[in-house]
Length: 149
Length: 192
Figure 1 (spheres, rainbow over the protein chains, first blue to last red):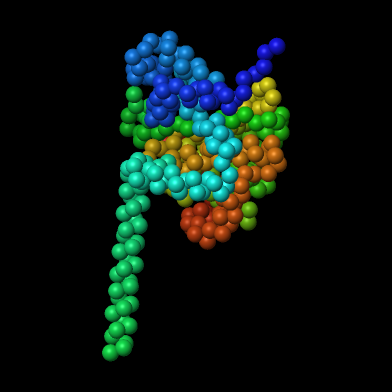
Figure 2 (cartoon, rainbow over the protein chains, first blue to last red):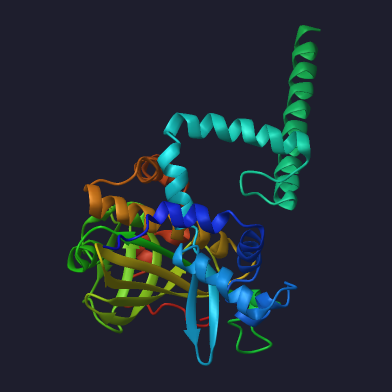
């Protein structure tokens, strides 16, 4: 009697390999790439790439679509999202994000799905608004002093 | 490897990309299809908007409007309508001046349920549309699964619906429904 494998097991098995994680990174970077494109990044054979890819497809982390004579590869974030949802509540989600963001900030890595450029942009925006606030404060103080005189 | 531009057919055209989200829903295919294509009802998986159309069939216009009908967030025309398996449409956010994309909803019967795939094609790279499509795709698949399986949307979807109502006054004037009547053709000069 054969039982269908647990989808969560398949995801963890698929992610428990460095080359497979690298494959996911490459597909995210280049959605719609082909198997040949992936092979260029690995020293091992095409057959080995195909075997790793099969594991990722079975876990539904990679979706493979036939386009003419080739296959296009896409990343599917849904299985990872399901795992995230299973073990994080609405409150822990908020606090964990804060803690992880602090870790990224201290270590100089990007977090919260924001690229370093976006974070820099957000930071500039924030500092601009702070500058505006301080200018307004100085003007108000000057007005108050003028009235007092 | 430069697949960011893999969908680009013309070298002069702006680069476009494709995003795919897939999820398994523990429900019969017809139930998923009926939930997905409900007219005149608030759809939590489409961010609390209501689908307006003249008829559900190829060529018909689609307008995703707020429950009070004042604003229209998304406009498009149906391209393919094959119940209960496939439904595709052109897609444009009314608040952005980006190109028109193509969105396809596909359903497939599998053991123990239905496989739902959401594909967004011809998304102009580096635009606000790209960012919204990426976040939206994940929320749509997750919320549709929750709605069909449990009968209620996720906490995140409910939060988005409440926030949309509260922040309605910040919606740009170009999103007013009077600017997007049913007979106005979706601008097709975009990427799609």
